[in-house]
Length: 558
Image (tube, helix red, strand yellow):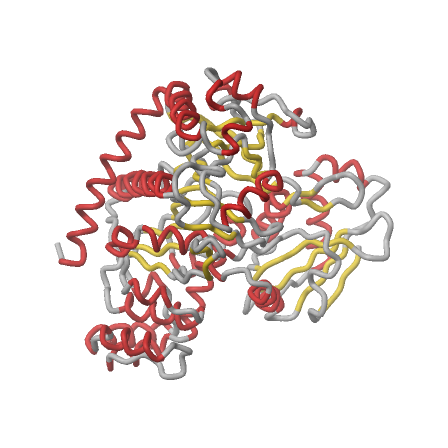
């Protein structure tokens, strides 16, 4: 075993023990969830919000549900603003050490308080997921080890109350950097680079020096593909820098950071020669070619992820895809027990969970189910109560229960509630759209760079406009057949669309966008202040101006 693998191996052994403890608790989900709520109410009872809801008087789960209303973020916003100004004991008695500013890619930006206690819960879930992953890899004769991460760790600033704020991933990595840096195949300092290209380049450069690197991780599959594109595009430069122990002078790197990284950039001519031989033999450099023992890719699963996974084999061949944890800035929802699956185990140690059945979604104060009361095959809106100071918090995520792990439900994220398009009342979600576009890629044997379904401006009811950008090297030979199949498949997955298409909704339209169109959209998102590690591209939009200014190469109508 190399020195590069010794410490991760020790941490992995510890992670397996943490995972084993979690698995035991899934045998008693009700008891664990009830105890979590009791402990939390005891801790939070004397905060301002705790006194408002008289948490100290609550003795049972039913009393909790009767006494505390279901609330969205807007109800908490006045409290988080006061926390940002430095007021203590508002939502949590613990000092707030970091404020996550959410990306705002799916709505208004939110401030989420982080304490050492809430961060410990994130760490526990992370270790549990590593334990699951290492055992899953061992079953396939693969190894867990060092990995490539490209998330920024830069904070964005400090509030008037002297609290650091920034993206969720930056906060997690900064507060636990002594743990996480042990898993990186590159210096932690490379993540401090502000320029996105420079950060990705530097991380790739140092990781390429390590042929035994085992995995790569990013928040979303689209970001994994972006790293693959950087590796392909800058392969020659990376290999040249690797051979000389330099860092490309054309990268935008602050002088002090450049000096610091250059001191670590040791020349590796033998490794560079190996990579150069691969590049010239294969005509490209992919992660699987560069790191032939690559064991896993860790990124979000469920929702729209499968659309991007169709492009993964070109870069990763049969490398397993692991979901790690399903989470948001507000909390940890579930932990993946295996690779190559969308179902994840409810994180019963991380939050107290309630589930809103579909027939209660429109109720002002809906009746909820507990974790063991949900049914396989049904869809729910998920509520969380946790140490961030949020009670019965409605994040708006819609999940489907696909099974049980002991007594804990296995859930799959489908879409964010409210994320849909409607010409009349049919409510086509991202989940519907992604199912259809996956099937179309297979049916027509092509890959799409990306897609977005919008609505026409001048029709009433509006027609669906299917906006696609073809991946390089692909051509759509029969656009009308593609559009007709889209219409049929959407009717199959969305009964309400099928009913409305009979007379109300006009025929859909297909627009083939010019190459680079969706890269332009993502650049617009970055300019709006969304961090590059948090980009979530919407595949449906009722915003008639969302794709404004893009060049349409061809347009087709049924």
